Image 1: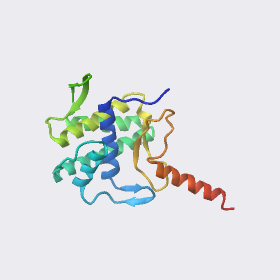
Image 2: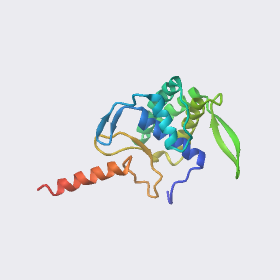
Image 3: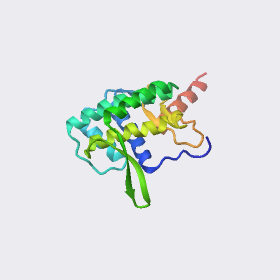
Image 4: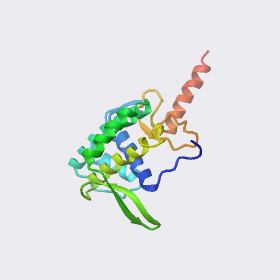
Amino acid sequence: MTGQVSFDSHARSVLAASVEYVNRLTPGFSGGSPYAGPVDEAQAVADSLVAIGYPQPHVRPEDAQRLAELARRMRIVFEAAHNGDLDRAADEINALLVDTNARPKLDKREKGWGLHFHGPDDTLVNGWAAGCAAGLALAVGSDLAGRLGVCAAPQCDRVFVDTSKNGQRRFCSPQCQSRVKAAAHRARHAT
């Protein structure tokens, strides 16, 4: 693969939302510390949407619970793709597509038509659930499957989509990358 990975704006936004949901709504490790998950799932969902440029939404607790469950299932996709188990990733994505009732639809934009995926109605949770499932399907169903990753830093299992030119991203954030480099530097100079 040559050049920067390019997704259309809709695919970029639903993949970014997938990363935000998994990283904010699933427990594990983050940046070297245990992460229990959010205390307030509705606020975490709202924060996720704000992080990707969506206006401050009102998120109902039951919608947040549904998206938290979706995030746990999306984590399976990221981990399976990261480990090269595309069969497992595809199985989970196919189940997500069915469960979210994702449907393709052409929506008119300023510069023409764009392919979007919608849920069975226009509610916030159904739209994002279907969009995230379809965005992951677009990634895994193409040569971009290897671009779904899990942070390589110790004590961190946050996920990312690698859009770098060389496809060599290993960390969820510059902070985790710096943490690993600093530890390696200290280890080399400890003797």
